[in-house]
Image (cartoon, rainbow, N blue to C red; front, side):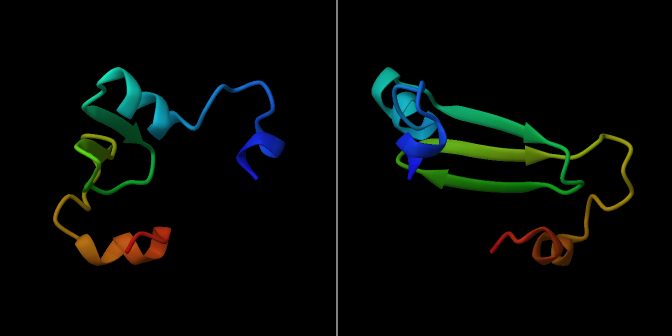
Length: 66
C-alpha cells in the first residue's frame, strides 16, 4: 500500500530514519504531548506551547492515540 500511495518515495519515513541513524521525530498540531519509541527512534508529539491541556493525557484517545 505504501508504494501505491507514495509512488515516488524510496521508502517509508521510519525505514529511512532507521537506515540513516535518525533518533527523533517531532510532530505538532494535535494539542497534546505524546512520546513513543520504535526501533530506537523517539516520536515526540508536541502541542502549541500555550495550550492549556498540557496535563490532560486522556485527550490522546480523542486523537486516536493508544
